[in-house]
Length: 147
Image (tube, rainbow, N blue to C red):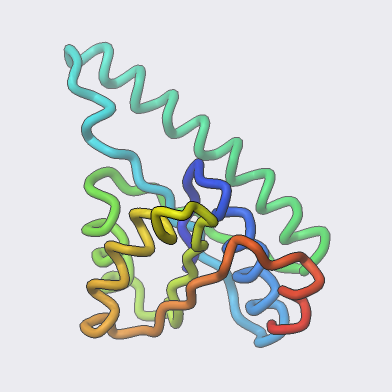
């Protein structure tokens, strides 16, 4: 499973997940989480905003899915959940026994690898699956070599 978000490091995580799946005969589940903070408006407005968020996610997903299909012969699955990101990642892992590894991209920021990697690292010891953290500095060629 790999997390789809708006971060730059998401690209390398997607590439790694697809390459690993193609080389190991596995699949790719792409999880995107919509934060409930985005919908603190009136009910009608929040419903419209929720639908727009889902549409943006589906468009973003389709870019990665097309690459995975065309280049790696992988048909990814999209899962959209609503809630706090870490809680929803953990819930998805618990609910889907076919998920064998969580792939996250690490940012290049001097402040650290990014909030998601930092938060998930705190949970790594209690997860039922390994976490792979993909450095944002790796090139496509380097990713090919390690997958």
